[in-house]
Picture 1 (tube, protein in one colour):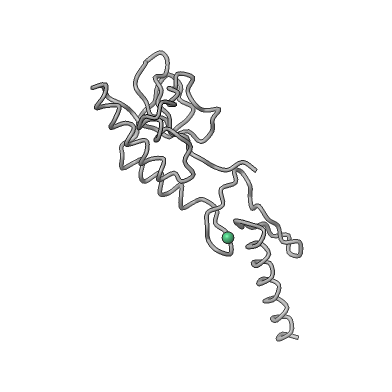
Picture 2 (cartoon, helix red, strand yellow):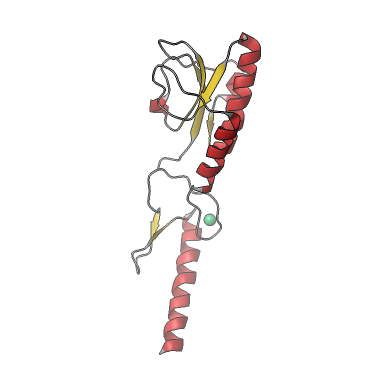
Length: 161
Ligand SMILES: [Zn+2]
């Protein structure tokens, strides 16, 4: 199953050539003008795939600050992708608000509340009895949830009978 991640990269999209930091949700969305940061630099450390959108935004902001200091030119950040011909750019406050909202909307495990990051699934487990789909971080937590659910309904049935 594919896990949801946020990929931070630097690019200079054609034809504007403006300096952009992209927060992409898919490798396919990365702009072809992106820099391959494989040199052990701070960019290399920050321009990676993040599993938490809040960390991705923090990294993108650090990349922007480094790049502005280095180039003396403005740098935009956006999470809208793909980047076509340039980007609108978002403020730090807008980016952080987006990251918090995105994180809050990520599916949680019904047992331990940990984030489950599989992409595009209504629920990664299904209750064979009720047909209900639900999210769980692992098979064990799915089992515990189902066990608790069905014990409950059996007790209820006994008391109402
Ligand atoms: Zn769990």
